[in-house]
Image (cartoon, rainbow, N blue to C red; front, side, top):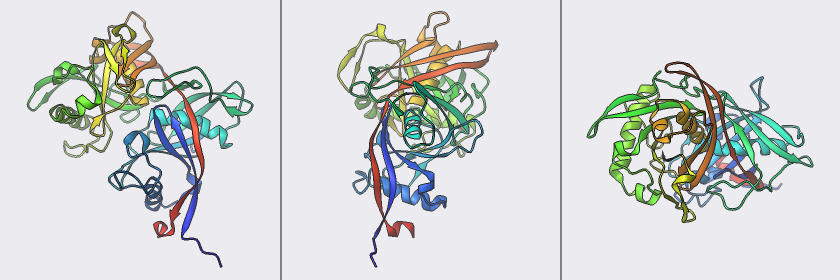
Length: 386
């Protein structure tokens, strides 16, 4: 009798936005959660700095996971659980959502027959199980399949593709239940070694802490290479992140792991001339409304996270936040252009003022491209299942 030393699992690798991830169907994996994660780590080749014995790309933007399955929510078409797979540790973080990976969920669901294709646009309602909220993806379709070719470009990805709109207007208060978790557009905190600084905490898609670059000794147009050598700045931002996490009640006795992405923290500055560090292309100041840089897993994000793009755009249109102060938007401006290390990201954001510091989120949309890179079977040692 033939005996194989491996088990195979169906896998799709997708480039979604500026990230790349493994898309797996939940029914193809063990139902025991601990065993499921053990299998997923083996698929990625973690822990190993090169992920050489798996499919992971050995950096955070290519070590991402989407678990897709039938919807458990009455208002959604599919469930999606996002996981950030550690490279050097046997850990998978399920603490939030990923706006780039979400761009691939709609095309995946259509191609796998989980959602019926409707031309010219198929609306896919995604239940993000990490935050228990609904994200709406508008996927262009032709001849029963998601379109791939198009003229829409996103900085951080070569070439162009078909534009996928992602509406996150239903994700306000993703972790805390409030658009402004503290009830304030800005708060003053005391940071050891610096003193009093201003922060704004906004929770859309994922909670994010915002601080102005100059308050932490930065300019705001730093490249990842420059910033990642600045251990003092990283330490300061991590201290601010820990204080913010304590305010939000999502940390442990004032501590937050550098390897846990939530809450995110970004530093913002007024618009100025910058350079896309991926292409060395000049970005004139007039092409953006302001600059922002994101601390992600202990280093600067190479581009800008999709979910945090939305949070940043919303923060920019809320009067009085530290982001709004540097953005200097025109009255009723809704399209926000954020300069990041890899170029520019556009976000359409709109809020309705209820009273002095209470706001209702009306619009939070961004666009991405995505395409399937590979589908087939990944082979796992039988020992992994024991």
